[in-house]
Each structure stands twice: as C-alpha cells, then as structure tokens.
Length: 128
Image (cartoon, rainbow, N blue to C red; front, side):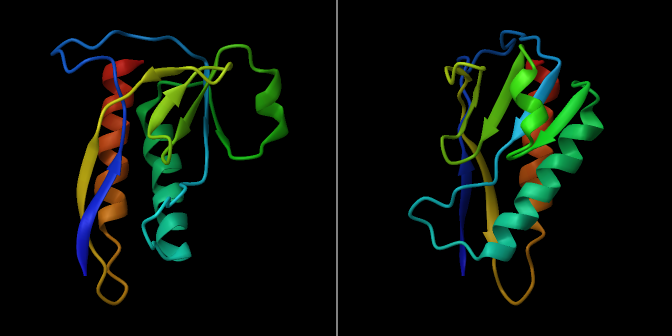
C-alpha cells in the first residue's frame, strides 16, 4: 500500500520564510486523524522527528509529549503533526505548510518516517 504522509506548516510559500526564536520545542505524538496508520509507524515517525530535530541544534531542549518540565518554558513551541503546525505557548499557529513524503508500507518498510523527519528538520533549520 502506498500513500502520502502529510504535515502542514505556514508562513507563506516565500523563498525567505519569517524567522522565529524559541529556546525549546515539544514534540507531540503524531495523531493519525482519519488515516489508518499502525501504531509502530506513528512511533517511528515520533522517534525520528525527535532525533532529526535534536540534530538541527536550533533548540536548547527538545521535549517529548507529556514532559511536565516543558510547561515552565516561556518561549516553548510545539510540533503537532495532526494539526500540522508549529504552535506557540498559547496554541497559536506560527508556521503552517504542507510536507509530503511517499509511504510504502509493505512488511516492515517504514523508511519514509526518516525522510519525513528530515524534511521537518530542514523546515526547522529554515524557520528558527
């Protein structure tokens, strides 16, 4: 089975996106919405997102979903893949653009999670 994996992000489709500043990011577990994604696939996307975002070096701290320490960070941004947006502490979207990757889910082939995560990391490097 093949299908697109999509997340959204906006600040216009200009060549020079607006730059934002944040000391930390919290990554929420991907919500599959109406797409029947296996739990293992969601976890693989989540873990790859964490690794790739840490590798950008753009944030002092990368928090996992539910980490209570993130609540006290005043300039925290949150990555929500269902909402497909970066949000500020108040839940307002600050970046919203589509990200697409091919997903081939035959057997245990979930390499698309790595590709998707690298695309998100590139957007983070360009945005923060």
